[in-house]
Image (cartoon, rainbow, N blue to C red; front, top):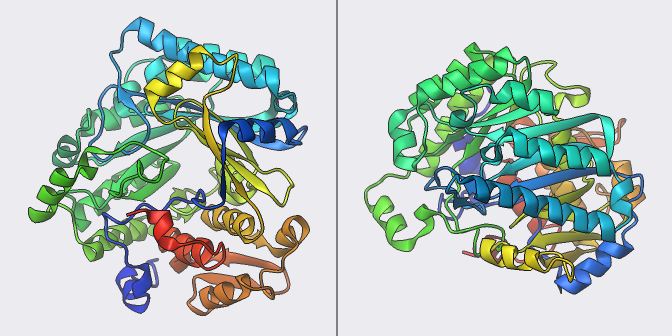
Length: 476
């Protein structure tokens, strides 16, 4: 079976969805709403009623053995000295303890998914990761089926790390391969090669653990054929989840949710453009089509968008629990570490996004005086159309059936009959980005909607429904 569309035709039919690589930085988290300071955000934390409600817990480790040239997340190159690694373990433990001691509801929130990301989370080593995990188990209310994910690169999983991490309590792994091409990885500053990637995949498979492999398309020196070959290799290896990401080269630092990447630097970017190193928009999406054809042919389904799972990999909806909590259900996300952002959602019609200090040095300074205040930088209060649009954007990203009754119960709106939702929803249905089931009372992204999900979320949901300025989202 092959896909019944190609993205080039979608781009021709929808010129407003054409976003160049240097403009492409769609973020599902809202960049609108009333900005509040750290003290006001702390007050919201104290007032939040999260007792007994499902939640996702996230620890951000901002350390990397090497810094990829395309990476615009909060991170720095680690010295790998024991004292530095111990220090970051202690900082995260201290931040978590502050929240537990000052916001009583956190102890009673039901943690259904736990994610250690970065940076490169696995750089801490299993001993330190286990100390954090033991702290969580002792102080939080953990669901008996809690999904606990450890993120790392191939060079982090070449020894006994996976087996030891499983013994410590991790039950899911996320492996950042990005490409099997040496030329691609070398140019991007990656510290591994094809053989290391295959060895790490073998280690995780031998441990009989669920895992995903992250792959990118639209990188310099990639072609449709090399991307297709990479994905074919993964399906032949029966990797349970294969995630495919388009290169984003817009400046997340300007969006206040990341750091500037090497390729964001103006002189570097101009040089790469002049040398034709970035694949064109059309060529980039031909790469995606090639990858998706392989995935569909081998029975993989996207759940959430961009995360392609082999049949029966996960339970209800064949979607990872982290994605069910963060996106499908839009449960509260408690996030620790520099640059980490989460949200207080629950069953309220108003949502508060929380943003930690993204400057690593400022974060560390604030952590020295955490008794006075946590390392929060700001928050965003979302209400009305903004809250609805954010929740719907996450639900679209999850790529599961979206129950219209949920939005009526929590937000008091009917997405099919009430504006500004009706017009955008009907247009998405007309363009075959959404399918509407009247009898079930649900809407769900189609394969075309999944293919262009980030552009659709930004333009149709955040812009048309959330009623904010699209240029503000991109901040280009």
